[in-house]
Image: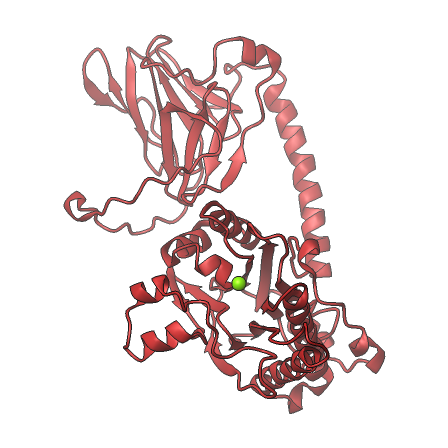
Length: 484
Ligand code: MG
C-alpha cells in the first residue's frame, strides 16, 4: 500500500507542547512496512510531560526500526513488535520518572500504527485515539483508557455525561506510570482510499466526530486535513495541545521487482541510523518520498508546464478577447455518482459554519458535483474562490491586473448576469445586456462565447456540456448550443 501522510501539532492556548509525533521514513530504514506513525501526549509538571512523550515516541520508533527491519521480516510478528515497542517505552519513561522528585507522576499516552500492505496494526495506551475513515464513515479504532470511557463502556454513565464529567482527564492506563504496561494491540484490514487519523485529546475534546469525519472526507490532501483539524480545534478554544497525523492509503504502483529490492538484506549500520523523535516545533508537512515516482512525476510536470505555456501563448495572442476563443466543446464528464434523494422535510438544519476566509459576493455560488467543491466569487468580482465543503481553500484564481481591477469586474454582482458552472469547474455567464453567454475556465481564462441571443437569463449546464438558458423575451427554456 502506498501511504501519503500529513501531520501537524499545535500548542493550542498552552505555553508548551507536550504532544509529540513521528513518521518513520520506511524506505530509508528499509523496513518491512509501508508506514509507521507514532503519537504521544505527555503529562507531568514543568518539562516532564514533554520529556515523557518525546522519550516514548523515540523508543517506539527505535524498537520498530530494529524489529521491522526488512532483513528479519520472516521472523517478525508485527503485533508483537508493536507491543514490545510500547513496553520498552513504558520501561524507559518509568525509569525517568524515578530519577528525581520532579519527574514523579510523569507519563504519556501513546498510539503507534504500522501499515503493511493491506493490514493496519495499532497499539495504544491512554486516551489518544486512532480513527479509520472508510467510504465516508468514521470509526474509532481505539478504546480510551480513561475513567469516564470505562464507565461508559460499563453502561454506568452516558457519553454526554462523560463529556461533562470533571473526571474526564483521568487516565487509567498510560506509558511510564507503572513498572509494566499492557497495551492494546489490534489488526485491521485496509483498502486503498481509507484514511487513518491518529490524534490527541486536544482534538477530540474540542471537535465533534462529525466535523472530524467531514474534514477527513473533503480535505484535498492528508496535510490539508491535518491543518484543518488543528484549525478547528484552535477555533473551538484550543484548551490543550493538539496533534493530528492523517494517512491516506493508495494503490501501490511500484513493481514487484522494486518491492523485492526494498526487502533485500541491509547492513547493521543502515538499521542503527535512526532519526530522533520529531519535536513539536519542527513538525510540518510530511510525505513518504518515493524517488522513482518523484522523478517520473517531475518529468511529467515539466512536460505539462511546457505544453501549457505553448497553449497559453496561442490562446492569449489576441489579447483578452473572446473572438478567437474556441467554441464550447464539452470535456468528458467524470462518471456520475448516484446522489441520495433529498427530502427537504427530513433534512436537518446544521448550525451555520462560516466556510469562507475571504468575503464573497452573493451573486454566485456553485457546487461542482465531481469533487463536491464550492465555487464563489470574491467581493470585488474579479477572482474565483474554490473551497471544500469544510472551508479549506482549494484554489483562488490569480488576482486581477491593474487594468482589470480598474474596469468593470468580470463578475459584477448585478441581476443582469446569471452564472453556472459545469462539472469541470468552468464558469458560464449569461449577460442579458450583451445578449450573450461567455465561458471562463476556473482561473478566469476566457474559453469562448455565444452571441446573438435575445435576453439570456438563468442558465444551467448538463454533464454533457449542453447549455439550457431561459430566454427573457419568450420566457422559454432554450438550448443555445449542444455539445457535438
Ligand atoms: Mg492532551
